Amino acid sequence: MTRLLVVEDHALVREGLLQTLRKLGPEVVLFGAQDAEEAMRLLDVEEEFDLALLDLMLPGMNGLSLLSVMRKRFPAVPVVVISALDDAETVGRALRQGASGFVPKSNSSEILLDALRRVLEGEVFLPPHLREKIASGRREDGGKSRTLADRFGLTAAQLRVMELLMQGKTNREIGDLLGLTEGTVKIHVSKIFKALNVSSRAQALVAVSRHRLRL
Image (cartoon, rainbow, N blue to C red):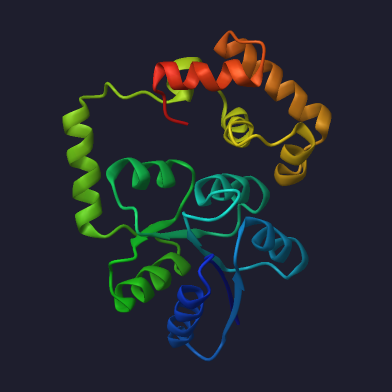
């Protein structure tokens, strides 16, 4: 039995994806979630999923933030991103945050099904044109683009906290999402502020904007 979770806020699109995924076989059990909150609830209360299909443009917590949380809380569940956004920066960021695959919504259902089969077998899937787009972006960038981790030496855990911090989440909310105590979150926030040389969340937002850095 293969258990799949589809996280997509548009009901018609979500139902279409669930219908497509039924073609994977009779042993597939499907679940749908309309936002990050519902997805986390399902991940918490249901048996372990074999794969999650994740849209990026979600209400509330966006897909990339949810991806970051899922990699921390449920590292055994591979995540395939499906999105109308397929620029090199978005694709690269999804892969850096732990996505096992990326499928543009403009692709056919056959490509999507092939991607999911490959990921379920342990591969990382990326359509050829996206591989070239990322490679081209790196050549044009010449290594000049920098992330928060590059610039300030933040750890993976601190980056996950920072992602939610930038969305206005409280320490308690961040702790609940990442499975951390509020005290641990406070420690991470303190280290983030120290690394950025700021003393408040507002100043942290300004610092990231001023340096034009990527999370």
